[in-house]
Length: 196
Image 1 (cartoon, rainbow, N blue to C red):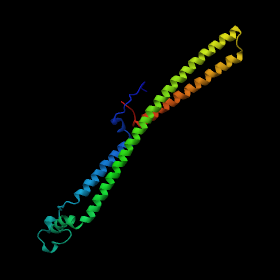
Image 2 (tube, rainbow, N blue to C red):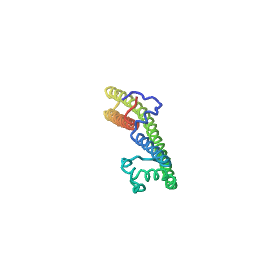
Image 3 (spheres, rainbow, N blue to C red):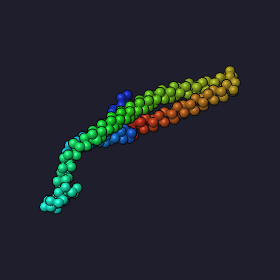
Image 4 (tube, rainbow, N blue to C red):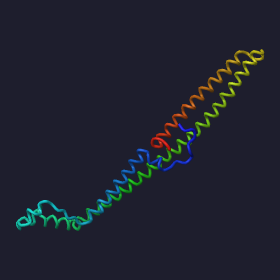
């Protein structure tokens, strides 16, 4: 674990998060759907292997498998089905906007989690430093109470009370460090697996 983290979080750190990656890929798929809906407005001409077979028989000229029928359908289809294609296009654009907003939400959620994790880590570091200072002061108090006990100015109960206070402070320090490490793990997860 690094001793200190830099204050700023680069945007590339957020792009490693799995939820942001998923939202980004969904956004790319939505853009492809819009492009496909836009391409449906254009006439299409599809060549099939039946073109040579049907080219000399006039009876199958308007058969669904003939070249002339396929070319006529491919060229007039966008004109006849224009309302359906417009509806599909509008639906694809609306889906694209929805996906874009989900992508924005994933980025904002990731940023919020990272900022919260950084602040929490700094708070736990400050708390651990304060607890360590408390343990040091109470340890000196135990030494002082032992000297007073040996000199006859304090009772053994005061020595035991001072020792108990040090033990409670050490347990509190250990719990604060435990919470600090858990916060580091949460920050690591919020950054999508680490920081560089």
